[in-house]
Amino acid sequence: MASITLQGNTINTIGNLPKTGSKATDFSLVATDLSIKKLADFSGSRLILNIFPSIDTGTCATSVREFNTKAANLKNTKVLCISRDLPFAQGRFCGAEGIENVIMLSDFSTGNFGKNYGLEIENGPLAGLHSRCIVIINEEGTVVYTEQVSEIANEPNYEAALKVL
Image 1: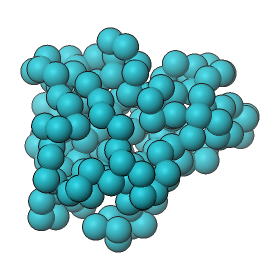
Image 2 (image 1 turned 90 degrees about the vertical axis):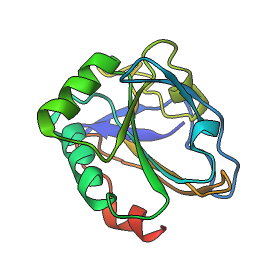
Image 3 (image 1 turned 180 degrees about the vertical axis):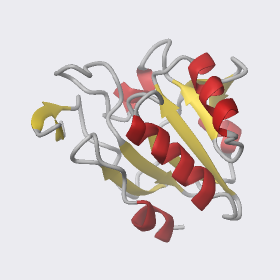
Image 4 (image 1 turned 90 degrees about the horizontal axis):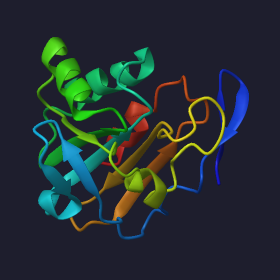
């Protein structure tokens, strides 16, 4: 379990992020067109998993905008923005913001992604949502970087994450 904070108050996740060097765990997430996306659908690409509680908060929206811009020109790299928001809300946000360089995916139906990756928030007012973190997976499906953001209202370290690529 990871201890993080929400406005300075300690909350916990149900586990820990995958270890660097481990194989990424498969997932089944819902895209904005309601299709199901699995890890295998992105085989051969480098993946930045930008994971957050809700697109309807300022910091979460900022992280999507930042990765939309910063990762747009990276070769063989896809940015997957993952939350428990409904796919309709994710699509609405991207349409309103003109965001086209990220893939929005939802864990709304089962929450299994958050559980399997150890990042679901266990207690406090955001219990059941995803904590803010970054997981980077290389072309071979190996986790090469993780960041569990310690204060959920803070942005991730974009430069450290992108440097790995």
